[in-house]
Length: 165
Length: 344
Image (cartoon, rainbow over all chains, first blue to last red; front, top):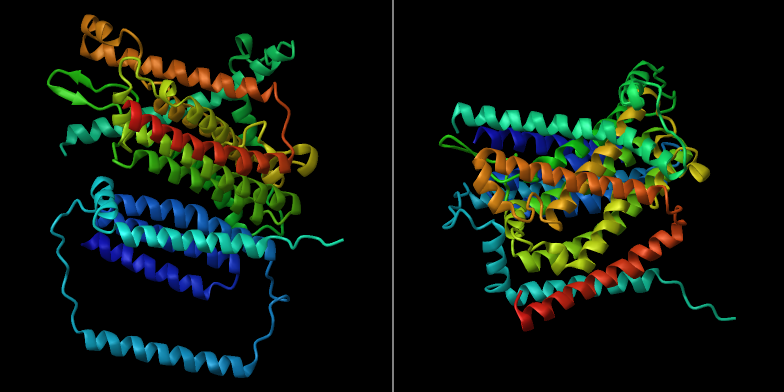
């Protein structure tokens, strides 16, 4: 349990640093650390497969692309557009509303009851595969089609128009 | 876990760590000797007999060189880069089974640091983490050549990771497990995976070359275009760490290839030998055989480096996306068809 609290504390600290870091590249690096703490959370929940997939996909692939874009954009202080006062005010109001909503919903929910897994080995590859390809086959396939269509759409958008001479 | 078990594990970790460092060290020597052999030269022959102490001399030189940190580099990240590179290189060997379990008295000692049931994916995770060392170092140097090298490394690694993963999926279909220990056990008695998965192995080895940034895929440190690539600004032992990490990566990927496709510690006539020399020496012979396979792979890495010229960048991307990925997908489909109609 104490491991959980240490890791949870670290996740919160790193995610706060993502927001407060001045340099966008540092911010992305803190986000990577945040994902790393999430991986440890999954391991603590005995979900090894989810942990390792989170590690490979989020830390290893998506964040590399984030970092890639940030490095190429080269966002410095002088290239950062000045923020309008109106935008700042809108931001404060929107953020305050979000806080109220979250606090209200947490309060309405009351104390959360800990969920006890019937099968503690549910997160292992074999069991997860059986559940995914048996019980949840249709949602699984539908979401894969969704991902495929998103990919095709991205390729279509990025493709150059055929040159008309 | 008893104290004795913890001590055994600790000892195993230390031994594997030392072995990978020593192998990486002598790979630098071997690389120069192999290069000399291919180019009809003598190679290093001054430090010690046949130049055998050359790696030590190089290490001493690296430590004693002047340390230069550029003024405009971002301080901490400049140091984090090489540290991350060498760390990710060293943790990859944790899931590799180095031999059959030893039976010492009533104790059974596993020659594997940890047998997690997602071992193959762990290797993947470590490989994908490896690119951060290069990217962070290249960006923190605040030099356009370093940045270009880092970006080349990142895009190359991401592109080749996909076909590597697809090649492994076909392997998993044959083996039905993600644990490296079980994969090694299943290859006992000439059931080497390379016989069932020749195309998969070919794709995997090409991707391994690209992931370790070895020639002909060493574009991130292509000196004719980028001065030194991502480590242009590095000096002293930080540069040493980057170069050293490459050799450790080579060792670990050779070990992974030997385990996944070439039977790991299995060799023909293994049961007969183990029955004759006892349950301690027998598995250790298997370990020696595994190392022989690893050294052959390392030699192959060097052989290719001194034979094949470097790719151009568009050729590299074409090979990765237009050749290897379709091939790997075709390999999966073929494996599926063969498994359905003929059994394994």
